[in-house]
Each structure stands twice: as structure tokens, then as C-alpha cells.
Length: 176
Image (cartoon, rainbow, N blue to C red; front, side, top):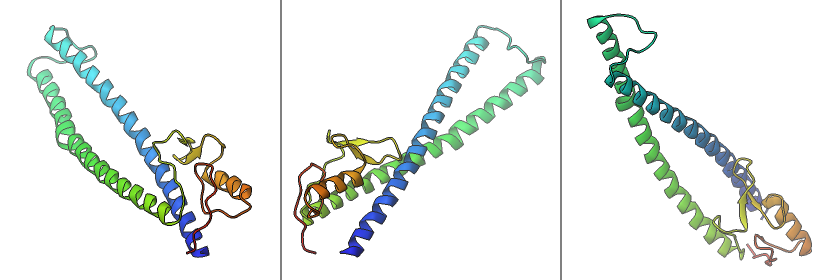
């Protein structure tokens, strides 16, 4: 039983670390979306300026040399967007889909473990379940504190005789 408890704790800690990493990734994605949106706006503005015949400020040159510089820079932008960034984003999308499938399998395994151990788990979609904002760890709204604090309070309330509790009900331990 001690080995199982240690395994559950280690997996819980690792899961929290992964949630923290995923939160950092989400922040970077949000920053990149904001940057792409700004760049799209700038490209639209430049396109309007060129179509209206306006000269771009700060760029000197004339004729073919000026046109060649503009064409070269546009070509590099196209390469960056089409050949590099688009491929990277498609790969990230595929990886996120793979991650979603893994999370779904983990959810099924956790539900099965909860059932096997006689525990009543709360679904992450439930109103009983919230994120505390620290590495995406779950927190019970009703009792406050993370799952460990909730477990400790519920276990103490049951006289130390419980398997698990996420809904506030003590469940007698299952013999393993």
C-alpha cells in the first residue's frame, strides 16, 4: 500500500509539472498570436500604402534598386510564413491533437482507478473542480486548498479511515 501511495504522489507531482509546462506553452502561443496579429495589421497597412501610391517613409532609393530591395524582403517574409511558420504550426496542431488523445486515455484510466479503489472522483468539467492558477493544479472550491489539503481534511473528519474524497464523502478504503 505504501508503494501505491508513493506512486500516486509521484504521478501527481509529475502531472502538476506537466500542467505548468503546458501553461508556459499556452502563454508563448498567446504571445505569438498577438505578434502575428500585429504583423498582419502592418502588412495590411503597407499594402494600402503601396496601392495608394504613397512612398514609405525612411526608405530611400529609386527605380530598380528600390524595387529589388522590396521584392527581396517580401520574398523572405513569404519564406518565413509559408515554409517555416506554417509547417511549425501544423506540427504543433498535430502534437496537440495527440496530447488530447493521451489526456482522454488518462481520464479513462483515472476513472477506472477511482472505481477500482471505491473512490468518487470529480470530473474536471464539474463545478466542484477549479484551477488554482499555480501550474494548473486542481483545487476544491468548497473546502479551499489543493487536493492534498482537501484529502487531509476529509481523512481527518473520517477518523483517518478513507480511501479518497473529492465530493466531501468519506469512502471506506478498499483492500488492495
